[in-house]
Length: 322
Ligand SMILES: O=C(O)CCC(=O)C(=O)O
Ligand SMILES: [Fe+2]
Image (cartoon, rainbow, N blue to C red; front, side, top):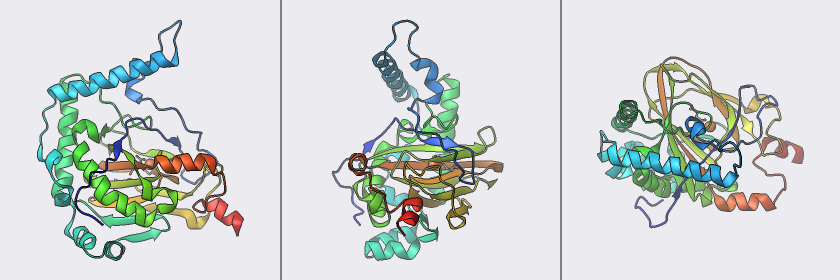
């Protein structure tokens, strides 16, 4: 596994969505994929009354995104500029760095655990880095409030949170994607395109205090998701997982062995397939903030359109095969 940045480019994606519902028991409740709009900008992207067209809506939306980014670039003053310049190796915990420097696959396998099939967990970020990112996020919200800027939310599931690229972190996260996430997803999730990740959508979410308390049952618009808890002090907020499903079986009930609740720990990461159905239980006290990377493979998506065979990674298809 290379720890040196390559010249490959993993694209940042801005426009994402997923499907959601609110049944943690895995019942037939996940609605079909919705088109993406940034929740907070719905007003900006409504078609004009009368002769509206999809192209008009699209161009309005592109315009409002451009203005938003322009405004950030011209007036947002970061609190921790080093966050945008640092090599990602300086914010990983020593155990992870040692594992990566060892023979990669063996090293990494020694430090991860898999508490339920398909959920990989490992210590990832140093406490100092978590603290810096939390402070930067607070600083960004404060700036948005003072300048009356409406923060573009990561996707339609969230009324809270922000996109990492908007905070100025695209270079740092780009390197992390190429030199760490891609190798990790190649080892653990090659069958869902983990070995051909070529774009990502990165964001911060928060719960408790003045934000939302839980996250509905859903699948991500990703092949592989990395979810790292940054802090702060909280109780509740477990990630509930209810089995991996292909499109056809997305609403098929989960079996007991597919039911797992994971307690989030600051600094610790989880990785799972995007189609591993999940949600977050209520953060019952305190404030929880997590960093998410939805990692995508355009090749895998193209190939999935043509190949409609039962994928081996879907819990229901696998059961039907046996
Ligand atoms: O709150 C969490 O930890 C889960 C977040 C999540 O599933 C998502 O953003 O896709
Ligand atoms: Fe998710």
